[in-house]
Image (cartoon, helix red, strand yellow):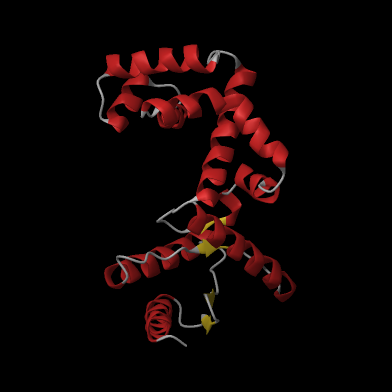
Length: 213
């Protein structure tokens, strides 16, 4: 085992045992698995706190090599542990691919769980290109960030003031960008089906872009 991996295992054990005395920690070649006993009342929130404590502690020692942490769904029986482990690995893989600094819980991956299974299907790339292709090409050619603007716009549920604040731009600047997005992309942001397709395509684009990096 590489010395840095051994140190990480020690760190995880220390944090885990302070959080939950009955937890099991097992080091493998490229991962460290924590099997924690959760109180029924606290459920997954207890696992979140443990994962966040590990992330915070590890960040102080591995600032240039951040951890990717995944959390599987809670299992009430031993027979479900394999599924929980598989889910945690998938969430961890997504966290690594998307450069997500915070622990990812499998139960909240939502549509990413489907996209992850479809990423090698050419139809996913084709769909993304049909919806966002013109904006992606324009950003690439002009050095703009219209796709990022569109993503932030949806994160903030179309609220222009909140989106502008999050992107550190004037509201009028954002309003201009949104109009350019509609014009260049040929997108009707008032159409519910179009909005659904855009949000799905934005997630697919994020996943596919992470694979290319």
